[in-house]
Image 1 (cartoon, rainbow, N blue to C red):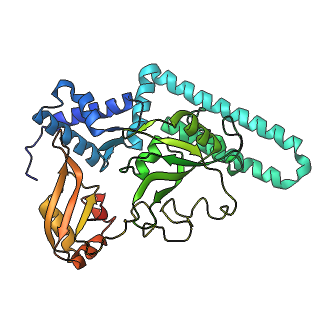
Image 2 (cartoon, helix red, strand yellow; image 1 turned 60 degrees about the vertical axis):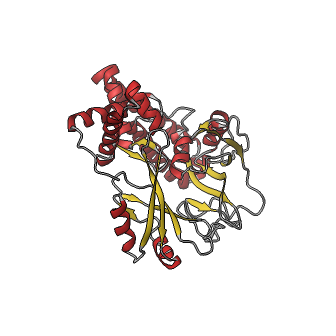
Image 3 (cartoon, rainbow, N blue to C red; image 1 turned 90 degrees about the horizontal axis):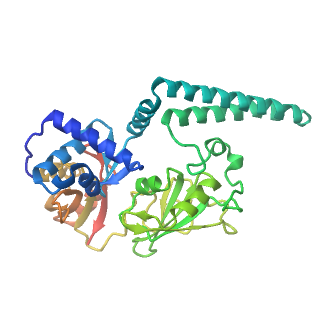
Amino acid sequence: MGKRKSIDADEASSLADAICQQIRASGHKSMELKALRSAVLGSDAADKPSKKRFKAAVKLLEKNERASLSAEGVVKLSKAERTQGKEEAAGEEGGGEAKSAKKKRKKEMKKKRERRSEVSGEEEEGEGDKNAKESPKDEHSENGNDEAAAAEGEDTGADGGDTEEAANPKDKNKPCKNNPQGITRLFLGNLPFAVTEELLGDHLNGAVTHIKWITDKETGRFYGSAFCEVKTSKDAAHAMMKLNGSQLMGRPIKINYAPMRPGEEGDWPPRSKVITGGKMANAGKGQAGGTGVKAMSAKPEGCLKLFVGNLSYEIDDDGITKFFMGVEAEIKAVRWLHHRDSGDFKGCGFVEFWSTEACEKAATLNGKNLLGRPIRIDWSE
């Protein structure tokens, strides 16, 4: 990868702001890189100098932690950037008056909860001091969640989940509209093979708490389906009614309720947030040879090549060579992958080694930090 010409700092900063505004205008937390570039640059999207300026702006966003770029080419705004955008929008609409009205509504909601708590306490005096002690605890939990939601500018309406109910474990499986059984486990099918925990979590509005990727028992290859546990029954109902058939990375995903079967009570949700394969989620080892989203597939016999992903734009042959030499794994060849249409680096590639021993040593670096990003490694034939 050759050296790039320097880009004017003010120009990159201005373009970075435009990128953030475009993502916020889309109504989502993230956008695919190609679509984002077309939306921001318009007719100049195919112009090479414009592409370089756009790439420099994305790098600036990553450097300033305003956004991140995944290996699959998805630009996602940081939590702080999303919050700032919503605060600016609120300021444009009503300025200081809007903020004052927001604080006033929060105080009114707090007073109403306190009154409800007092009435509830009078009605349940016969139940003893236990309930009297629990009530302030629940109230504090609810207030804390309301304040956090207000600080983030998040919507706590029906579509986004109920913040107060999500904080109460008793309401997790509470029957609700379109989910009378209160199911919180979902089966997702027709998933893109490049899907990640982050992308799937974003698509389900941040409601996912656990994921089990379904893989082949013999090879460990991903089947394109998964089981997901969500925060509440309302979140599950929302996914079923609003997201079933929705597009994720160009594929219409399928979503169904996956009620617990006899004997699974102690096995779901799993202890780890993300697991791969295996009949017993808590057994400690899945079908793909490990647990977690970084678990590697089955190693081919005599393997000499690795797939490497989630790489920084700054990576080059010397950088990857030095990285693997840290475990005395000498590289034979490197092949970087680029987008066919634009020629942009995809953030991944293939690395070939001189021996299987060197390949195995290199594989031990899966998940290690390289130029500020955790590298993703898998066996390749």
